[in-house]
Image (cartoon, rainbow, N blue to C red; front, side, top):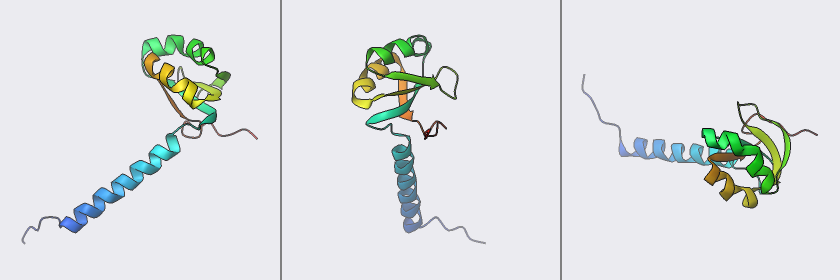
Length: 103
C-alpha cells in the first residue's frame, strides 16, 4: 500500500469551501444596520456596564438575551459598534443568538 499526498486541487477546494462557509457564518452573525441585535459581553467590565453603555448610545432595551449577561436591544449598529467594542461587548444578529423576530 502506498501513501499519496492530497492533491493540490483537493486542498484548494477544501480551502475555498472553508472560506465560503466562514463568509456565510459572518453574514448570518453580522448585526443589522438598524434593528434588533444581541449584545454579548466578553469581559466582566462589559457585563457590568452593558445596559448603561447601550442606552447611552441610543439603544432601546428589549429583553434579556439567551446567554448569561447578554441583552436583546434595538438600535443602530454604527452608533453602538465602537462604544460597545471599547466596553468589551460584541453585537450579533438577533437570529444568530437564537432570538427570532417577534411578529
